[in-house]
Picture 1 (tube, helix red, strand yellow):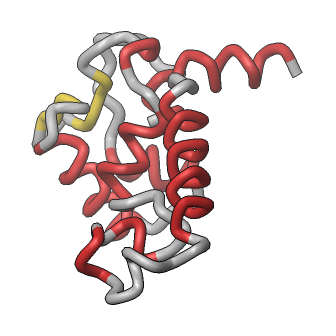
Picture 2 (picture 1 turned 180 degrees about the vertical axis):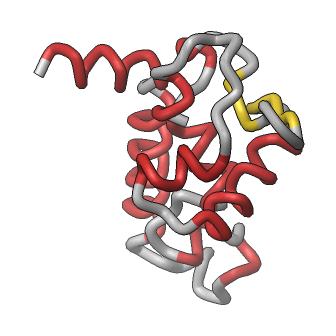
Length: 125
């Protein structure tokens, strides 16, 4: 997504080019791009001259939304990611409030960063 955010908005970037610039296997990247495209985060064009591009400004994507879509839950322990039914000790667990608080902190952190922020931070360093 950062690679695409660095390109002109109208430019479609071929999968192979993204994979090479990010040092990721094309097969793995294709699975990620499919998820992002189906969720409406990207525009995709197949064939010659095709590729992927962002379909909104970089400010319109939070890192949290991208990670949750591509990675699933950002929870650090399974009992918070799978809801109360995940653990029989949920009601009496003395550490669960701590894990819930950490989950909220992580979510707030990543939801507070946009692709535009990453581009800006990279330029200023």
